[in-house]
Amino acid sequence: MAFPGAYFLYQQHQPPLPKDFLRPLTRKEAKELRKEHEALDAEYQSSNNATLALYRGWSELELTLSGLLYEVLHLPTKGSRLANVIYFSPTSLGARTTLVNDAVLQLIEEDEKGLGDLRPLWAEVFKQT
Image 1 (cartoon, one colour):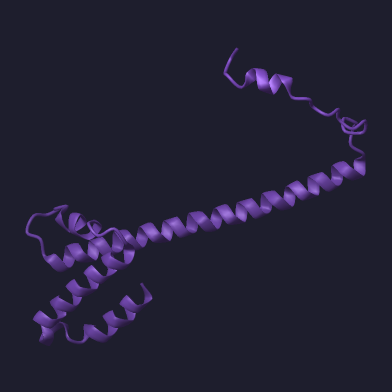
Image 2 (cartoon, helix red, strand yellow):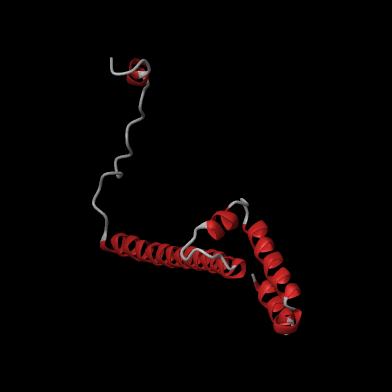
């Protein structure tokens, strides 16, 4: 036997198929099925496109925020991955955006004369993330 339950499955009685089950479809039935298939396919494509747009937007947001953190940190080594390590350490987007927000606000606070005008603009940008 292929597997232990094979004999049990073999012993189960299967009811016969209805007589009209295996008949060819009428033109009307085929047309209705085709129409239903096209509607389902269009719905699938729309859902798939929306999902891809969400993933694309999400990844752009994550990369932009990690890049902003890189700039805020003024890392001396060009191409350093330290900002990415810091940014992606928290496990939620909320924690990562808070981390970047805190870093930007600290930078603004440390250079209030030069960057103070950015505070209301940054507040608006952060609110949208």
